[in-house]
Image (cartoon, rainbow, N blue to C red; front, side, top):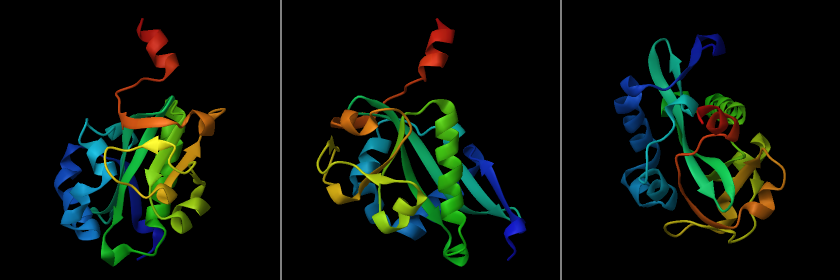
Length: 177
């Protein structure tokens, strides 16, 4: 496989079944019990910030973003991120994360948050959130809560509950009035 065979596209409803299959392969049935899954159950993910990777027309990876309020921060929760086993270790996951973060930045998100493996995500720009600063709707290892801050003073404002919230950037909300 050559890297130029890969195409990154915004997710749409036609990708739902294959994304479910890819996530089942990557995470198994236990994926529904995780604290981040509890947040994603509260409302729909943002398709405009969710992406797939296709190789010769076959969807082989995806990343989803869900709008959340984390303490006093309008943010997006990244995940799940998954790549088919046949395409792992080729940089596809890292590129999906990069694309999703940049899209969230353009939309006006103040941060991108996830629960994940620090050695994988910290080289992609993520930082650790203060231990126990965010309260999830279920148990979570506080050492795995990470953030890409995209606004001033994000870290001190990441205190309290993290939950799904359908928010609009201030510029879009003002234009709608």
